[in-house]
Length: 126
Picture 1 (cartoon, rainbow, N blue to C red):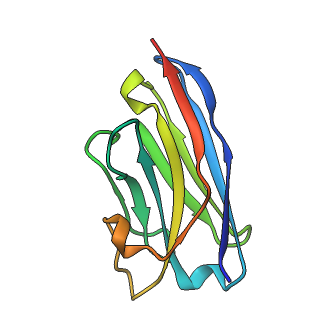
Picture 2: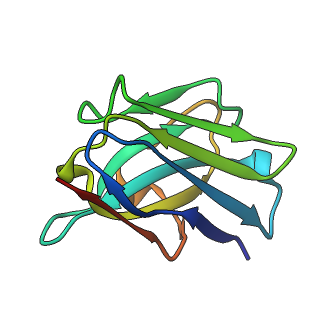
């Protein structure tokens, strides 16, 4: 059984930076593509960044491109998300998600992912 657990989050001032991590357990980490999603109040869950099994292919949402870096460490069974120049509209619950990898395919939609963490709240104050 795959288990995911987000670490980090909290209250950050606009313009600041934040780092999140997500630990993976239960299966072979390198068999899975992984992603970060977020869901703000009264909004649908949306992609932040997604990566293939190796981390060699990473795609970002346009809203965070250029100010976010996603990565994975296959030795530590962990993925990371660093975000800079945070804006109030970045406030959301951030989730990590996992899907069985198919070659270097990167899933961009929530329905592509079978496993989810419980989420961590990020609040950006103006």
